[in-house]
Image (cartoon, rainbow, N blue to C red):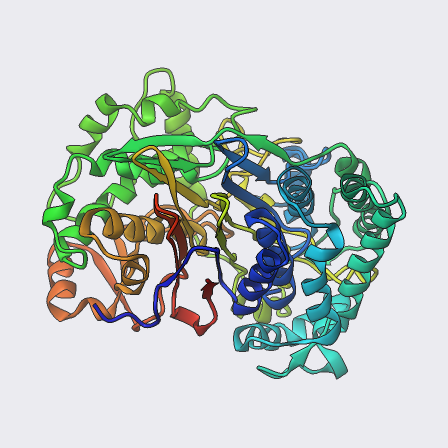
Length: 597
């Protein structure tokens, strides 16, 4: 089968990510004698520089990984929680019904930096300086700016000048948007990383002591102090149409740290799929598998209307349960065993018919009836299906027209048998004003919370937002086998499902599966402000062909046909039992790349 690029094969190491410079930088860590975890950390910091519209240092990250040393699969939780002052009463007193998609009130505690340091300390081999050097180089010397970054900045030019002047200082050099593919620099960001390295190395030559000092510099030192001062003194225009101050403090940051977690797993044929627990949307993937287990998917063509229809209807049911049941398990009781049980899914599967559903139908589990009804009530009252969203002040026009931030992804497998899938995001240039002393922005993950009591994802201090970030590690025949993921918010699980099923059931290579036409639905409420939903919606690339698209329309889907090569940003890597490594990356957007040897 023709593929847009070769599937990378080797035995030494594979790094694949959503930007070629990050993939190459990660590979350089393997060449230095580092492992998959060193490579992942280095690639992540480069992505913060070269894709600032998708990720930043104050973002968040979950990762799922297998360590050849410990012989187990673990989850790294770099999802920051809500600050102490983030209460429903405070936000409602600010005149809000929904948390805005940007600005200071959309911020939770930055989680990514501590997570990367924890991974580097416990599982990496290289020094802090070595893994940060590529990011510092591209921030200081410049990198060729992606056209999409240039376009995003161009769309925000007037907003930055009028409302977020500190962002204008970083992203509008000379007062104008930087040109596509021209060298773009962020010297202040480079200075921040250099200072963190200096503070680490001041502790001597001990590698772990240097990393611990870097963690302190970020969460208890000069970074936290700069963030605290900026949040306290800055009132910011956001998507609500009003100006607000934030509630994040240096005390919030000092009391938080990244953690390790056990994965949520599901056994599907000869695979075991590892995801994050329901503090994120990861179990949706597992619920979809539990529903689809009852269908003869291998008999359906990988691009057939029957295949796309069947999995789309399964998605609608699984995502409806996400809305009704998922939340931080430290705060709410999520009946995940019931949601993944055969008995539950045998009944739910009966709802999948030959016609497209236009209903949001969460399942009913005994003891949760009030919660489900409350969820449906809130969604009816606050969904943009049922209301209009005002643009607020005229200065918001450019903010509304600019692209919403998205996500990046990194997969690494190495010769030692380690593998990791990481989904960094947040801290976009669209999320909040740049902090002048640091050269980067805060995140906007708090928009995942609801400002209504009684929901699993209701806002509460110390609670993790129900993140959309969802990397995947699949074991095959009892061995760690495959890591994969895709940016895309609510679409992440949907595109990953297509990749996995086409690989597992139809025998397609990683690159072949990624190159196949993609689809997704926006049938359920978006996780992002202003929480849109499109009942019955199905987007499919035109490359499915007229016959398949007409068939999907005939089944009742509200079909939106996308141009070829515009849906999905998948990357993936795997390791066979004999040590042969595979890597693949999407040609969509013409920037993702797999490298290896």
